[in-house]
Amino acid sequence: MTSYETILVGTHGRVGRITLNRPEALNALNSQVMRDVVAAAEAFDADEGIGAIVVTGSEKAFAAGADIKEMEQKSGREMIMDDHFGAWARFAAVRTPVIAAVSGYALGGGCELAMMCDIIVAGDTARFGQPEINLGVIPGMGGTQRLIRAVGAYVAADMVLTGRMLSADEAQRAGLVSRVVPAADLEAEAAKVAETIAAKSLPSVYAAKAALDAALETTLAEGLRFERHAFAALFDTADQKEGMAAFREKRQPDFTNR
Ligand code: HXC
Image (spheres, rainbow, N blue to C red):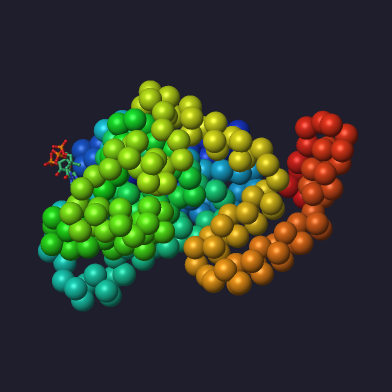
């Protein structure tokens, strides 16, 4: 398996795992982290043996944001010409479901990275925030756009305009997080979610993720059309026949991703 400078990667069965590993900077997301995470996620995505990906950080920080020290002296022109954060779009575009397992700080780009994932599972120590306003800037990796879709206009505005952090419980009540567990159980809980997804039929999982993404990106009429066609297309898979036969025969399905 490829080794990376700023992350650790591994697999367990059909689950790929990416662990942010810049403890000296609370996993701040510099350009190298972006390159590493994108490359690792794309490699897992290209592997039919992987059915779900977990992204996690440390106990103290999922990620404390984009790397302020790397950005500080850049000009607007440099930010535009380098497309400094552009490659994150490739992470958000992987077809394999990604679970963010968040412990400690998920701030700025860290919160935005979590929101590029499909499911966010939190340890009870997690803190979510978009504190960019305290630095004289605004979120730049999707914070204003994804947060508003996740938690609604008013909680998003409170976070983005004041910089206040949400606790894990507040984030769950707001709809940003689907499960909160004691921090010590986070790894096991995220693995359980990932293994559950990875045991399904991959073509249906890809279709489900694409349809969910479409709901956030398009009109209801377009989204419904997309869903109907994706649903119909799955009837050409062997796994649809297997899944429905298994139901009729009162047994567990044996999916082959065909
Ligand atoms: C660079 C960072 C960092 C960051 C922490 N560190 N966050 N370095 N970029 N985002 C570094 C600190 O400088 C310090 O290094 C070390 O990590 C430990 O951090 P401390 O501050 O000493 O820890 P603590 O006192 O426990 O405070 C934790 C914290 C604080 C509350 C999370 O670090 C913090 O406020 N960080 C910045 C959070 C933030 O503003 N995020 C948004 C960034 S902007 P040294 O070498 O001093 O020990 C952003 C824009 C995204 O994300 C959009 C991009 C397009």
